[in-house]
Length: 254
Length: 254
Image (cartoon, each protein chain N blue to C red):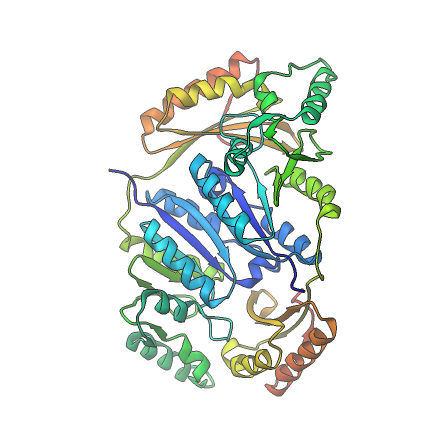
């Protein structure tokens, strides 16, 4: 059976304007690969209501899982939750569990803080949402259908994902084997590498030049779900490198 | 007149698998904002022929400019150019200028290198493409219609964009003003900030919590194309921070 697929929506003007360097894509891509839910597409979209609604509805129909980051705080530009409700055609309303969590949290501060309307927004969710725990800053994410809504701050998102991961029905982990060589150029190996790709159609073989102080070169990477096939592909990639007169080194360049 | 809009397609399995941290989005977002061609959407898509064709055709109809990064090297997984040709419904064929450039380049190497079929792929482009100069590693990018096709390696992409930028019909530069305060929390300022956003509908006002060794706090950022409006919005944001008992500091946290 094929692995389930994932799409990531990064929601936020701050990424599109260049203010903020996204740090969530690489983390989620890696973790989802390990869970056998490979990431197939990422979209970065602005805090614009209709764009969020349309995009969520498009991708939740096309992928098994949709993960969103960003837009679930208390300020006016945090509109992800209400847009997800609109996308699912359900009310956006107080979520009792989240409401109790946050009311207790603000009352327990030293000095106590007001659980004001802005903070109440963080406990307002699409009807039917189940919570994703936030061990860092309390305000939870949520899952509705196949859409998992998480914070944009990397430390909080990562903690949320750690709690969510065991609830995801995963597939066969995606593994990789890398071989690299200094001094080698892509134009030399392309023909041989295409032949290896043709012999391993279920393995995804990529070629990545690198430019480092210790020297330039190329890394060859095989990805897939069958470790025996990956080992064979890696052996062929190493043999190709050797046949071109370079020294194959296991793994990515350091 | 409204500013022209931009979409970025990051093409490459290596970004979706988590192998490679994208470094092109932030650079292009910043530079495009300065040119008055704000980035409105980014998609990261795999090296899959039909996905590239469909995505290019969708976004080139929706945005004024489309920029792509990745997939223009000599190896089998570099399929961007042929997919762009298919998207435009034109032949993928040798581009005489690029062919001459690369033939000369490889012949002039010490020792001379073969201008082999893999390297010839880098001089094969959609009919009607005009070149984007590559001062780093010779093999050019290209523009066809409103689609600008660049390398994925950040150093090369940036050099290509520097050459391309003067040819883009830009708009009014997007500027920003930031004010931040240590100790402040979003839940305290949300109501006041929403009121400022309502008074400045043409300015995009965002709130970004930060977590730093020197202390936590919130940065407020106003973005737009009218410097006078931005100054007024920034003054109101500073006044809001002061009214809440915190010290407003100009700019982003250091």
